[in-house]
Image (cartoon, rainbow, N blue to C red; front, side, top):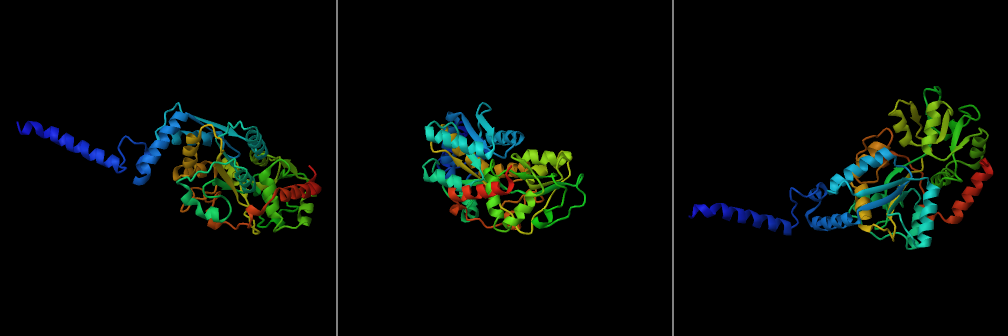
Length: 370
């Protein structure tokens, strides 16, 4: 009789141990990967957030860089990492900067918000939204890994951090322009025939305008007047810039995006980048949650994921974006070097006002007049 009850006592002991581990925040084999990887003191909070996100059932996010294929990879890993069903929706809209800004401003003004998470490289604009009470205060557990970017003014703890950063620098195709070997912006002038260079349109792109503001710190107005004499084509989307180079329509892009160089070269193009000796303007894609997000818990989980090591690996590998995460090792250093490897033009993002933006836009128009 004594031995007959031994298995029962053993089972009871094991159940007791399991219950104790659960109370102490221990992870179980059936827990999703994110919970198993979380610190013990964070597991119950994360489990509760996951369950709340499941009830939301969907997250709606807007971005101006991420391509559909990258979104598919992110969505698949996001569901797996948090144990979400395949029915959980990730609705993504790829926009241009001006359209995203207009949409967010329209929705917040009307009080009818449909966007949960938005990402755009415009710290001054996001700061304005925060001041207006339109950005949710959320202390993401991932924010602790982004302190360096907060110190640089490329984010604000408790409100936004960038999911990836990019830049606009000279780019060309070695298939169609074989001689260029410049290292300075000065070398771009007259490097190709008139009409065979493209330029980002600062009247239609908020990030192009911010880049112009930064470049004016190292390049005088006469430089841009000389650039205007090259009669550039004015482009809005970075994909179009790369496509025109690959096709030989343009021989040089004044503001090429490393992300697109990587993606087009992966398909057989021969695009090359110049990392200017004067430095570059780093544009961090600030990711934030709208204060009246219709799916707040799903939004928090998505934001956490995008900033996590897993999310950053996918974004960097697929989009060649520079990560702001401390200790992150870039899988594509040729296209997305570590921040400490880049020569950055210092920007006082918090000091850029609407008046500054309007003044810079007017100056750009007076020079180029597209």
